Image (cartoon, rainbow, N blue to C red; front, side, top):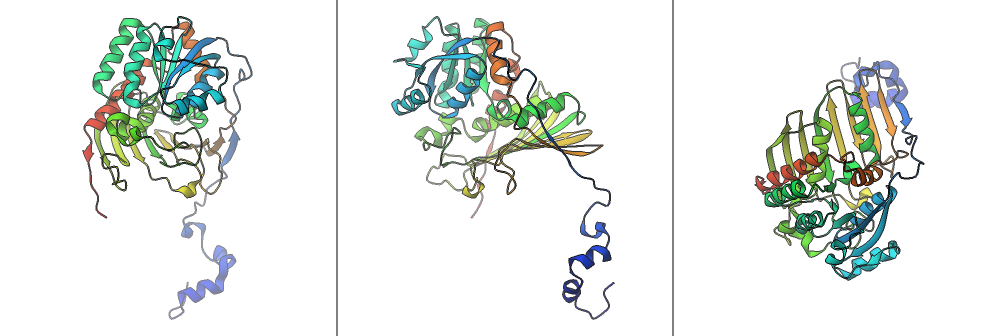
Length: 399
């Protein structure tokens, strides 16, 4: 104990770190007296990772207003897809695409793709509010459809898509890549389904994004087009990037019904684009769990990537945290998974995992199944973010 009248700072300086460690118990500094070492693991690829795709599907691209199309195409090729042709309304984007995929033929019109009977699947990352109408046309031409997110931007479009699915029996899929194409998210799904943390109670998604990026396929490498700033075209922040997060909420909680409890949006810093929304959040309640989502366009340049996306999955017997794209100051790579249960704390490096979506989706096209993505869940996520967007409070903060 420090004697009366002795300066506390001088005492601490005199003692030093070695003296303090013996003078006080660990609990005095917030350390757990019974904490153990974290178990570190590397997730291994599936046993069939090196096996050639079981099926082959001819597919084309119709519209590529967002660079997400590259990840979508790569996933299909990994799964056994054969890229046949591409239609691009923006010539410069079409030229860049053909340079990357010289095996594709340049189509002169969208109809050239729709009327080609050899094409089984069409992909698109066209301007968001045009994706659903295109998908309906694709299905009515007897083909399946994979859209970039958001796949729909209005409730009227949701109804039209559901009607076309019922009448044509074709597939309308949406590439929710933050779950389907992130290895740590795939591993989290395996753990949840195995009961590793008991019953999932809640998901919390923190999804920061960066508007101006130096390069990459995330969408900012070539600058942001005019439609990016118009909520009628991109759907609004909750509908656009929030669709990823609501897909995860439904998937990890296993909810088949859900409602939006509260939602809000704001334009904090981009007053030169007064209709743009750079912040938004929403609270959801499903029949099997709860969800909270925060979205923003404020990733600082110092991070070194487009966003520090994080997911927390709370269960009755533990929790999982994902650092999807970076582990700040520790690793520039992503796919970090942390799981804590009643026995131990584990860190799992998921970078060696095999992504299953491409092969599963190609197999679905051939077998008329929905293994890669549940059709009902896909459209429920789309509907929920539209309802969140429509019901959102438009908030203003001072300063």
